[in-house]
Length: 150
Image (tube, rainbow, N blue to C red; front, side, top):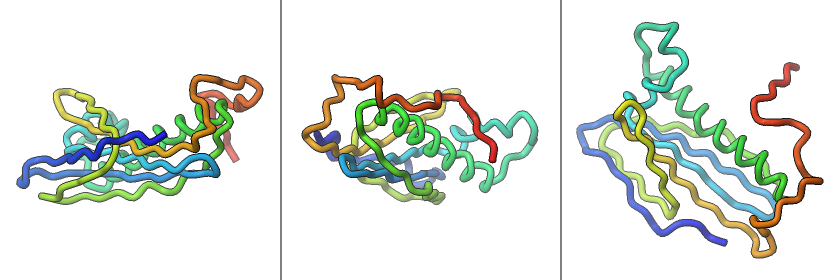
């Protein structure tokens, strides 16, 4: 299964753009996720906005990396129940002006306080993976929202 149609994504050249890319793979999967938006969209969702009056670029880059990390972490947990194990890398964050992202991925667009947040998702699964057949015996011992301290 391949998901993606060769989508081109861009913002105006005078705008700032933040992106976070995170790859994950295993024996049956190769995938990548890119989160991209303007800093104002990241600021609208950043949990630090309640504690810190002025968010700086490092606050924005940390948060967009964490958004990608949380999405992939949840996907990884869900895929496990379908017999697909994978490991994930570390988010790579890019901040700049006037760059143009081109990806062969499925793009989902969200509006956050009137700001656009795009999630680009590229997935290659082995043909023997059946996402219609969930195996409850392979369910993780943890649930979304569980925290482990070590």
